[in-house]
Length: 160
Image (cartoon, rainbow, N blue to C red; front, side, top):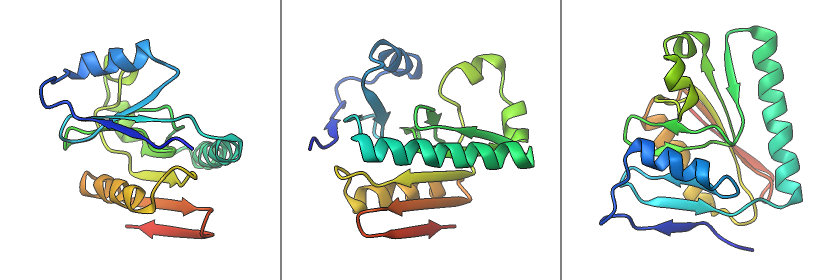
């Protein structure tokens, strides 16, 4: 199992456009950026986690389509949080009002907002503490509801 790699970028400060382009130029890799500007490279998931991820994204999308109150996103959607971090929850949702307030250009890049609802799914390479801190970061930046699904321990943590 390969764990996520965090690259200290104190001497290299990428602009938002440069970071977005780095992600576009390396689509086989999954990047996030913490609020200090350090880049986190996450390994691809295994089969079980990938299957769980698609099921979660499907369920959030089905719920969103049914209620027509917002827009759902899968794990490849990036968000520029108010604290400066660039994050990609495993599944997320924003109200239509937030979506409608975005310009066409903003919709093409990492969305400059924090989702109202996020789900993080623990994979075998994730530490529980890292994901708990990630959910707390979402809450500190405006998320109203977060779920941390932990198949290893057969638990779900709910954050409000």
